[in-house]
Amino acid sequence: MSRTKSTPIWIILMCMFLFSTTVWSADRFTDNGDGTVTDHQLGVMWAKTDNQGNINWKQADLWVRYTFPDTLKKKYDNWRLPTLAELQSLYIQDNKYKGYETDCGKQVKIVPDIKLTCDWIWASETSAIQAYIFNFNRGYHYSDRMVHNRNYRVLPVRDLK
Image: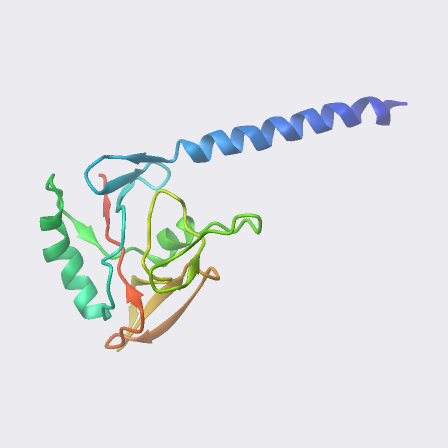
């Protein structure tokens, strides 16, 4: 008898949890209206889009620090390459979410607040002549030589603190 009484309560609690999770994720990002998006969960600011062309790691590092800031209406400092953990946090793992097709013809599953033109994004982590890249099509990373640019992109990020 107690099992039948607790089942509806369990269902109601589960529905409340799922609804509150959706509300929290909707509050994660704020579009700043200047080509950037504030990520309240991580305490960082992202570019709304990647660099829109093939780029190797060394070029990506320079582009993020010296070229990208001049493309924005409002000037911000301390732009950098994102970490793998930061990139992973933008990937949507939900199998129901289909994502969208990029300019290079790849499907990506990234938060809707950020638009990519291809599926691979350089990360800040390096090892000798290699650097890590995160794939927003399948949600994994691997390393490649820094001089390669096979549909690789860069997505600038900066700390808010």
